[in-house]
Image (spheres, rainbow, N blue to C red):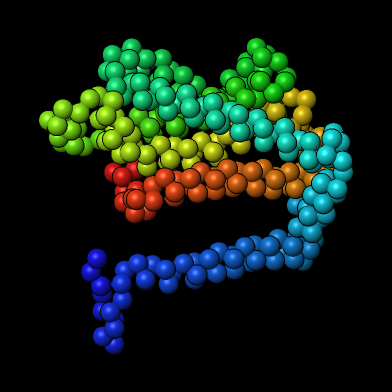
Length: 284
């Protein structure tokens, strides 16, 4: 790694410069958050925006406190509905991601499968998942299984498409080299193809994490007995805009937590690959 030289003649390593930017980036992020909080709270009060249009942040936080202050099993509290929606997201996301990854691996290894399944996958991918949600609820009922199926369907395609692109982007020279060394098909896949596709797989998981939250709420809007989507409908029916915004924040926190967990795993799994190289591999 080559060092650069400052105008004063002092040598600076590239990674040291990168570390020096991290605190300033975090500071800017915190400053932006505080600015948004200040603008929301005092902007609404200064311009006297009606609360049913946009409540001040303090009202939203108060609604959230009241929601979590109730019993964990209370049907009008936040604990119960947050648990139901989180469980739907976790199960649906896990199933959709596993099925998408497994099918991408199979198609990448067997060309016949791709030629056979490609029209059906393209047709299913072009369907608006929100429009399919009522049919799934009709088939599977108002319980958790229909919401899990919707989340599974929505998270399947990002993981499948990006994983398949990753398996197909493998350098053919590396595969030929392993074949010349008498490596088996399984060894080529484990030692070369799968590690090379990991940046693509994690990119798909990252997108699927955000979509999974949307899928769970859409399913609950269509028909459900519990969940944050149901709670939003109840609060909007009561014109409790502060409570609705509190649920929106909860959904954002769930999405951030799931995305953060995936990025933490990605950081550990792809620790051997520089972040810039990983991003370039996906964007190439």
